[in-house]
Image (tube, rainbow, N blue to C red; front, side, top):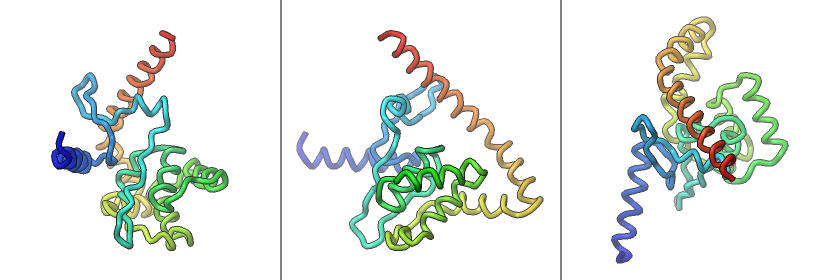
Length: 181
C-alpha cells in the first residue's frame, strides 16, 4: 500500500478503537455471542497491557475508563504505565494491590497515584473520568452509597455476566491448547 493509505488505515483503526473505548492497538474479534471483545486469548499467553499513548504535548493524557477495565495486578501495572509513565516496582505493586484487596475502589487508586509526588511531577491529564468519578463519590456517601452501589451493580449485572462468560470461554480455549500439546 502507498504510505498515505497505510497511515489513513492506521488512523481509522485508532479512531474505531477509541470509539469502542478500547486501548489503541487492541484487536477486536467476534465471540460466540457476536459481541466485540478484546483479544483476551493473548492475555493468557502474554500479559494483557497497553502501552501509554504518550502525547507530544506538555501534558500527556491518561484514559481513566480504559484503565478501569483491568483487574488486580494488571490494573496496577497499567496505572503505573499510564499515570507514572514507568513500570511498577515490587513495593508499589504490592502496596496498591493490598489497597485493592482491602476494598479500595479502583478510581481511588487512580486518584492516589495521580496525586502522589511522582504523579504530580508526571503531570498526566486524566480524561474520561466523570462517570467513574461520580460513581466513586455517590458510593462513598454513608447508607445512600450502599443502596446506590447495590442498585448500580444490579443494573450492570448483565455486563458483568458477559465478561465472566468471555473469560470462561478464553480459559477453555487455553486449556484446550495446553491439552493438545
